[in-house]
Amino acid sequence: MTYKELAKKLRLKESTVRKRVLSLKKRGVIRRILAQVDPKLLGYRVQAGLGINVDPSMMVDVGKKIVQMSETRMVLSTTGEYDFFTVVWTRDRDSLSTIMSSVSNIEGVTKVVPSLLVERLK
Image (cartoon, rainbow, N blue to C red; front, side):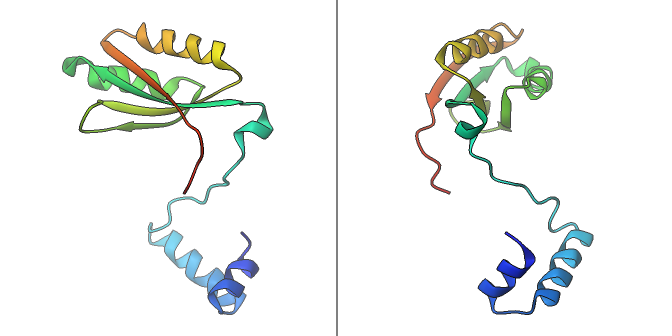
């Protein structure tokens, strides 16, 4: 969304919106602005979430390895059922299987549970 479009929605002048966004960036409130892309248009027909459990003594090492995987789009450490939750984009289900095997083979990983992502609601 452009500054002009944002200004129209907020009923403000474009220059006011631009100044406020720059101020928020300078103060660290806005760390970065991202584009939301459609993975399917880039050839990634399968998007999945992976719940990953890890030996507690290996959390940091496993986390570093998962973050380095090119297929991961988001990696979160969590409390609850899984130690990590990651979002991966793949070309097809076969490549999802390959990614799951790669994650499972990381030393310290004890469980990998996939969930296909059906629709992004927000």
